[in-house]
Length: 356
Image (tube, rainbow, N blue to C red):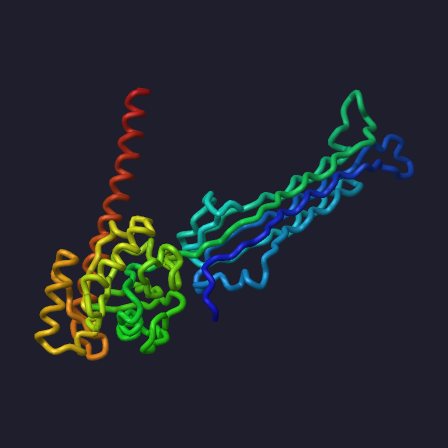
């Protein structure tokens, strides 16, 4: 299945049905009176976050979505049926933007979350609605209201706990394939990974989601290589694993190149906790490895982990380091949520006391 993380769609909610102009005419009924029913409401356009999707490829083949038109009212005070609703099913993590591509409408962060993008038009009133003591035989009815029409952008940002960043051929895909069941393409040439991959890693009985994005090169924020648009998929992560290949001649420069691209992209990526690891260490002799580890430590300000996904060196330590940060971040989020609830309770109590 092809990966697609951005799509443009056109939506239109259904028009409301028109009200009816009708009069009751039956034998032996002297005063029938108006009995035109109201029109039905037009169908709404909804968006829903569902599980099991990780791409917007479905919207490559269908871009137009229209709610059903409401049925017109009929005689004998019969109201027209409402138009059918339309639901756009998107992956969790999809953002909905206005046509300008900048105004955010809704961020679909939770499975099962629903949001109405366009409301259907109300049905028109039939002539029975306008009957009064001074106007007992109205001969008019309202037309149904038109639906809303919009052009929207859908952008997917994958939901992951940890993100893998680094230059091409830094060993990100190999790391992902080793510790998860994901099977990304692995080869000895740059830009083997052309789209993000997800995998679930397990360590000491705990699971967390890893996201591997295509490699960054110098000038990625200006569109060089594959650019930096895939960095949006690690914006939601709690920690970044920065892999620097031990085969790089200048590991410090390799680290700073990616770091600069993260800063140029923005999105608070440089504020996230970062674990730096020197990967592919099985390809170096001990003396050279020691020199490169020291140079990388000077560049990043911390002692980097030594990692080789091929032979398993440092895999357990790296996964545990990622797990510890993720668990601590989730616990902090939980405490913050409880504190917000306590603050709400205190405000209500104070308000009750003032009223008393």
